Image (tube, rainbow, N blue to C red; front, side, top):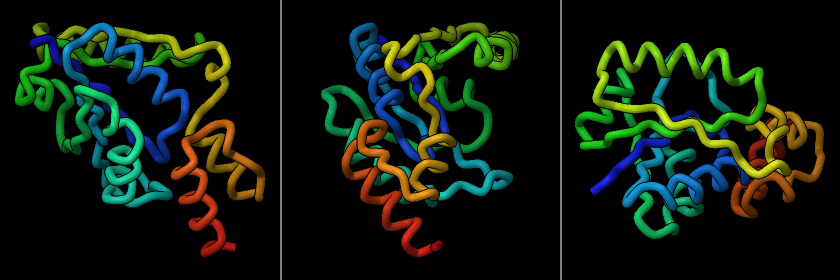
Length: 161
């Protein structure tokens, strides 16, 4: 079975993320959407909330699983018997960082390949950071995220404002 890991913070999951998952699913028998737990970041959504939102969105796609991981991504990939890591590239500005990470992961474990996938053109500008900013300012994010995520963002910012 060809298995891939699609890692990220997914704070929150966007339609661009969903598009990359769908593309990866066409290439692999199974895709594990892996939420990175990072104590140094201050996410809007807790780890549990992000996992729940992912389970309710990408978790419904056949042969897509949701998991969390700590530590090195290549170690998690090895534990999951995954042969590849999926990374989304929206723009040239993403490439330098992603290229550096891919080369480092290759040095750490050369049996795990990094596959770069580009989302549909309509999602190339989309980021979780921008979606959160629009929601925080009271804008409509329903075109950018699944409905359940739009509602969760609305609830978050009602509590904050």
